[in-house]
Amino acid sequence: MAPHSPARRARSTNPPSSGQVLRLPLPESDQALIALVLGGSAKAWRELVERYADDVERLLYRILGPDPDIEDLMQEVFLVALGSLHRLREPSALRSWLGGIAVRKAKKLIRKRTRLRFIQFMAPSDLPETAAALPSSEVSEALRATYGILTQLPVEERIAFALRHVDGMDLTEVATVMALSLATVKRRLVRAHEHFVELARDSDALSGFLAKEGFGR
Image (cartoon, rainbow, N blue to C red; front, side):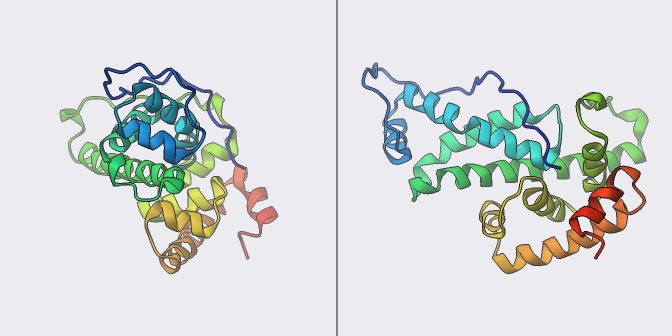
């Protein structure tokens, strides 16, 4: 049921400025690469972005579905990372740290859209039109139905469900990127599971999936 990751896009995140030209090969370890970035190496920063851009893009895609704002969110994630990289205490945790930033950005966007929908409902004539969604032909019917249901879940449940059941993260990973305890994640997943099944039972596109995965039990 996991969607295909979108095609790689051009990376245009602004790197830090540097007066030096780095001629030596860049290190493979994140720790050494981070040290170079913090030292002002633009080349090292571009390598860090390139190294983890696909991971961040995939994570945002799993949470939001095929969304026209993913590219902008990726830019925001790496800009936040650049400004706070000096606070990362464990370079080995770089991937999950970036994932946490991506989750927070996605959460903020979902909440913003929820408020916007409410405002539009109250005074639609006073607001500009929102951006159109991506063409439905680009994703499967089941995927469209899944994200249609996820938009109806509370934001914390939606993110936990997407990370666990769409992206396939284990519970510990979900807890890490959401900055929650394992017990809290488990509780949210239980509620998300119940809400999802309740809403998905009437979906022709998802009935087979529910039976196959045992979601109705």
